[in-house]
Amino acid sequence: MSDAAGGHRDRPFTLVVCAGCDDADEEVMDGLRRAVRSCRHGIMVSTGCLEWFLHCRRQRGVHAAVQPCAADRRPTGAVVRLGPLRTEADAAAVGAWLRAGMPDDGTLPDRLRAAPAPRQVARLN
Image (tube, rainbow, N blue to C red):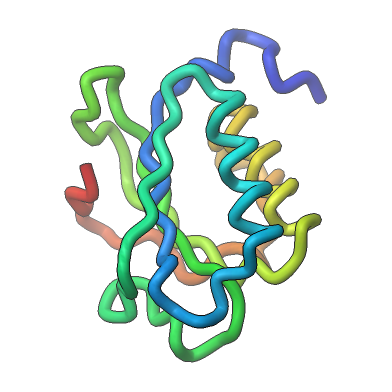
């Protein structure tokens, strides 16, 4: 699968990563940073613990939420909760999914989705 096919690499998104927990593995964080840097309109925000939203204290590993948006950062879709991301391979899988335009076609393994997206569009941006 080509990441750049059809211009999907340019699909804007905001990735919010819970970096407040002790489980924020630097190798996983570096993998996510590399993925976001490779996307023209991708932004990564590291924040304090979002346990109320991500339930990150329940399982060890990096937890995050990603939301598609317009180039001006207005949300355009539902939030996808990610985690736990425990290995560099997990970060690479998320990176490939982001570069592919966040398709809902099974390319992101279910084990990397923290929970189903909420019915409402959360305003992370």
